[in-house]
Image (cartoon, rainbow over all chains, first blue to last red; front, top):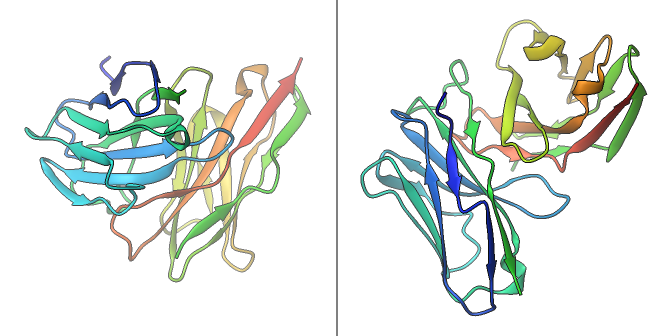
Length: 118
Length: 114
């Protein structure tokens, strides 16, 4: 069955390069999240979309990070002028519902993109 | 503010023995609590959640978790562990007044030896 798909699986960038990470959520899922997972740590919230609207970007570490979901399906996380501290696994998750009510709340995660900045 | 602590980086048990993975949380209001599991090269998978009601929650693959409000804990348990349960386990919390933002613990690596 189709799950959340992320590409590329691995990305190596030289410091200062721009990168774009793609997330294909489960079809019909309204909510989409990006998380950053540093080595040995749990996922940390980056941003949240409800359809095409970015409702929360409070977790983005700096203005070098930008996310979009223009048609309410595929999302792209872009990092400009990458730095070594950006090295992490970037996880995308989607959820069927618009409202996280608890009752139907369940996130479906992709396998992540492992970004290494040299 | 909300946070989760998983006090053990690693848990090692023999197959057939009981498995417990500890989690404590902190929220300003009431919590929604979750357990996710991550197998190598796979995304996090939902195991179970506590929303309200019974303090003992049953989930996938024979796992269960007990919500203890007085101890602010939500420990994950399995009566008889399998080698295939070896994975990385994450506890997560959301304050019910926060619409969607989950806070995850650092994770506990479970190794079940044959």
